[in-house]
Structures are given as C-alpha cells and as structure tokens.
Length: 633
Image: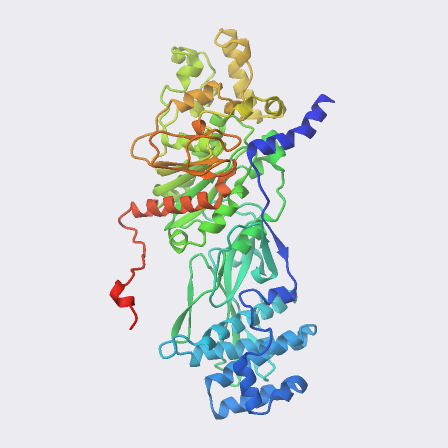
C-alpha cells in the first residue's frame, strides 16, 4: 500500500523537480486552413488583375458557367499575344477553379495541374526580375505554384502514386502530363523514408517561434524508420527530416505535344534555392512543422518510467542524430536533465534552425540517458558514446575537422554529465570516495570491479569538446533532492543490472575491509547525487575545468532577470553560478530555462561566437550604407 501511494504521488512532485513544460505537437488542419499555408490570398478568389483581364474581354460569365471554355479562350489569347498578364490569369483562374471543384478530386486535379503548369511557365520564361524587381506577379505566381503542387502531391499520395513513374494526368487545358521517376536530392537513400507528408496539412502547437521562410516549393515532413546508416548513426523512433518538393515540367523529347513532369525532393537543410529558368529562386522552408510532427508521438516510455526503470528503456538511451551526419558541420550535443529526454530541446532546436549561419555550420545531436542512474555512470556513458562516434567517423575515412570543434549544452543534471568532458579527474574523485590509500584499495578488487571503478572515476577530458554551455545546472546540488518525495523516488529506482552487480559487489567487498560506514552501503541514484551533501557531487565540484575551453552559464531566476541571486524554483543561483565562465546570463524563468526565448537567443549568440573563433569560417554580415547614401532628396 505504501509503495502504491508513493507511485501515485511521485509523478507530480518529480515533475516539479524536473521542470517540465507544455508538450509540442501538431494539429491536423482541413482543406480551407491548408490554403492559408504561406498565403492569405492565392486561391481565395481571383486577383484584381485577373478580374480586370476577364472583364475587359467579356469572359467573366465563362468563369462561372463554362470554366473549360474559359481556359481554352485564355490559351488562344496567350498564343496570339504571349503577354505575362495572360499567363498569370490562366494560372490564377486554374487554381481557383481547382479549389471550387475540390469535392470532386478527379476533376479538380486537372485544374491544379494547369495552375502548376502555367505558374511554372511564367517563372520559367516570362519572369524578369532585372527589369521588374518589384513585380507582384512574381510573388503571386510562386504562391499559386506552391499551392497547386501541394494539391497535386496530396492527390498523388492519396492514390499511392507519388513515388512511382509512368502514369499520366490530363490538365484542364488539355495538356497530357506524364510523370517520370521522382528525383531524391535527400541525405538518405529513398528506401530510408517511410512516408512524405505536406507540412501544409498540419499546424504546430505550443511552439514559441515559427521557423519558416517564403520561397518556391511545398515543404514536406519526411518520416524515417529507426535505422543505422553507414556511420551507424542512431535516429529516434518517429524521426522526421524537413524537405521541400518541386515539380518540374518540360516538353517530351519524343512527342512535342506532350509534357513530362518530375517530382523533385530537396534537402532543405542544405539547399536554399533552386534554378527556375534563368534565375535562382529561394526555396520555401519549414523547419517547425516536421519537428512538431515528430514531437507529437508518445514516447515508448513515460518520463517517470524512463527514470525509474533504466534497464527497461535502453532503446531510448544513447547518442541520437537529429539529422544525418555531415562532416562539414560542427556537432552541438544536447544533454537533457532529470526525468526528461531529447524532446526537451524542441523549442530551442526550432528557433536555432531558422538561423542560416547555424544551419550551415552546425548539426544538432541529442544524448539520452536514464536520470535514475548515478551521475558518474551516466557521464561515463556520454563520454564513451562521443568517443565511439569519433572512432566511427575516422574508420569511415571522413574528416574530423569540424567534429573536433564540438559544443556540449547541458540542462540541469545534463550539465553535470557534460562538465566531465572538460575535466581531468586524476585522483580528485577516487581519493575523496575511496580514501588516500585508494591504490591499495583498488588492488583488493576483482579485475572487472577495478575496471568499472576506474572508467567512472579516473577519466581525462575529451579533446574534441571545445565549448560547453550550462543551463540551470545544480553544480552544488538542490535541497529539493533532500525532501521526502525525492528520497522516496530514489528508493523506487531500479538501477541497471550491470551497475547493480558491479557496484554492490564493490561495496560489499570494501565493507568487509572496513572502508565504508553503514550509511554508505547503498548505491546512490541520480536523485541522491543532487543532494548538496552528496560526496560525489561535492568532489565533482572541486575538480577544475581544463584551461582554454570556454564555458558559459544560463541561469533562471523566477523573480527577476539580470540579477545574480534567487532561484529558478529548483536550483538556486549559488548552485548554478560558476566562477570563470566566459559569460553568464540570468533570465526570468523557472527551471526549464532551456525553453526560455531569451535563453535560446543567448545560445544563438554563443554558437555564433564559437564560429567566429575559427578564422576559416567566414560569416556573411550585411553592411549598412553610409548615412549620406540613404538620405532622400
């Protein structure tokens, strides 16, 4: 009965200790809302210019009564006098007719295909940004094209055609369009993608920032299966990647009266523009919706279960790549805190992905672990995972130049793991825990026991970690770990078998030799290690960081920003503050400071500072004109 009551009461108290916040997700939208994606006017009625053209040629009645005839008339008009406004009107009319007949998909698809053909043709042949740099028609044609290809893709996907070739569809204007094999300019082989979905079909929820950019194309959510690539990179279950779809049209070489179409899937992390005719056009980008779509899925284990049962949730542990490995980008490894997982970084990732410099030079990874494990054990797993990843890169013959500029960002307990990457422990952990004569003590252990101890307590810094950011980290503990609920939570944690077998075996052997007092006779959990009186935490706090590796602190204060002191509700300023930090920012926030917009902007600043420390990286910075140059007449 007591254990049952504890399990019922524990989640609420530990959620407070962990500092969790609203979950990010997506909401499925209907067709009318989909039409708002990237536009507030296209497809919602004819443009003024289109209405003027139809009225001037007495064609408005055909728009209402005989749309097929209207398309034929407009085609004839354009052939006799190929003016841009005629082609623009054809695209506009076709899109609006497709929306009108949306309840009859097999009819609507012909109009959407015509809208895509005409808007693409306009951009391909008639667009002239040199002579008309402020043309509203160009923006409108891009919007019409984007909406049309979104509807085409939705139609093809619903009929399982989007990844096939050889099928043909007749456009409303009579053009016979044959779809050839899709082209995948994506970072992984086509078979690695389970599905592609339109970002326009979903609306992100609980994101503080929308990472999108106007351009050409239909942004996609690319769903992956858990798999290992050539570097054995590990992706989370339900992992998604962003992409942008184009549909390119061209005349058939065999039959001039036929048109070929090809779906082109572009990696929007690497490609930011596409050539349409003579000009490069920016791609439409959406990083928020794929991220929110991934976060919507429930975890295989809840936050509480992940902490209490490490052995049952091993599938969630380890190093995760949020995007396929790119040897030309610096890894930023995000290490979560107590009773959490890599999803806690979604707000930050969503905002940082919107910065083109950060997209170009960084790749974001996550390290997941059960926070029920002792801190030093989890820190050992982190260091081993990073070292193993570097070995794989070397064995694959890839460059480690950017890998060796790694940045670690740790929140709460994750910061305690991360700090060991820039420490040489030497005897500073073993001696406080095993006594001055620790060598003699280690000699009494079995070989496997001694190896276990040395791997956790005797470690050197990771030379490839070049900067660390600490967010709300309890370097000197939190008194919350001393309360009854935290103690109860610690007692319910089922530590991993190998840790229990090795750890308890070591404690038992040493107790027989008088090395431990009775109150030291249990393995300490991650919660125990957050106690300000915990000897491991105190010893870790006494180890200096290696010189020349900058570190930064971001600290929460529930009452006021910018003022040293106070607390984030879990960790007091006195515990989070570090002398010698390259920078320290106090934000008005609870413990989940990693989700605070100002803290995220500070991370952006730090990452840009990191790039600027390397002379071979050239950041593009706009130059403002002199005051005289901007003065008007």
